[in-house]
Length: 130
Image (cartoon, rainbow, N blue to C red; front, side):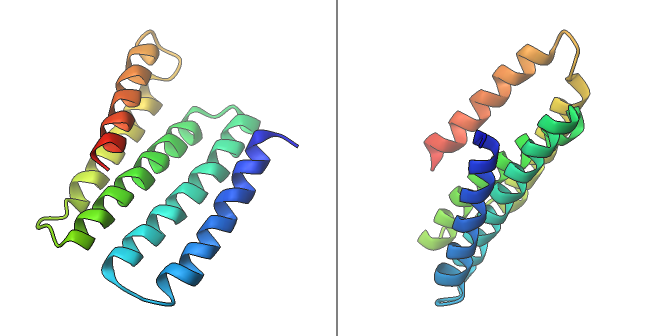
């Protein structure tokens, strides 16, 4: 059993728990945002497994972007929970799209390492903001 299989199982289980216990029990705006984050993380784990099997740069970039989106949605959900305005949902989606396109276009080029480092900084910044 590989780590990809474990990640797929864990994210699927966590998504089902979040939707079943977190959203359906007490539906709210932040619970919907967090559930969307769990769905994004689950989709990212499925895409990462597929990208590894197919050796596809676009699938790999899409999985990275969806993982970034999942982190961003946790942060947006916390902002919504605290009542902050604006919650910056469109900014998180925009950054996600930029990351997906940039990572996919630079795959296999000389700029791939630099883009990967910037991507890690963005991940760390969102994690720190959360």
